[in-house]
Image (cartoon, rainbow, N blue to C red):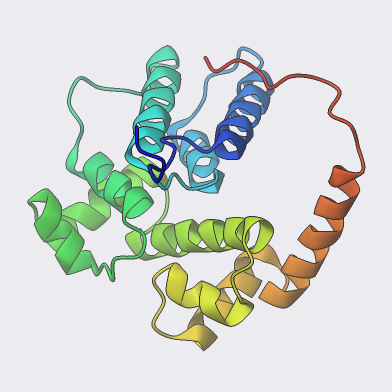
Length: 198
């Protein structure tokens, strides 16, 4: 491996995912995980940036879904569409372009997608972008004004509205609150090791 080769995994991402999965699995406490709850959980996770991270997250999703009877042998069009929105959230997807990508018409995709996720394609994409933006505000030095472009928005003002509606605060307020939380966490000594992935 050359000196300029980038690592295949970010240790901080692995730790965050492991911790989140551990908390989620414990929260189920033997109860059945509905597909909508599983969707909300995966949409909220820090986004994978590298192929290996996407592969790991896909494996975790399949194991959780399989263990709760929520997976079928073959992915449906709606499942493929959901995965595209999760992985390629920067793409300026429309319902028509997403339907073409998975091989059906807009009406069929919208109906199947809503059955699977209990939300619309548009709202799912907005939620994903807001989740990634929150992660960027927490973990990067990217300027607040640049976050909307980074997650695929052409209109900064539209993104600001969506972020505030979903997170309840402005981007600047969110960053300040996360900076304070990070400073407090840095002062603490980790008490335990990262949980083991399922």
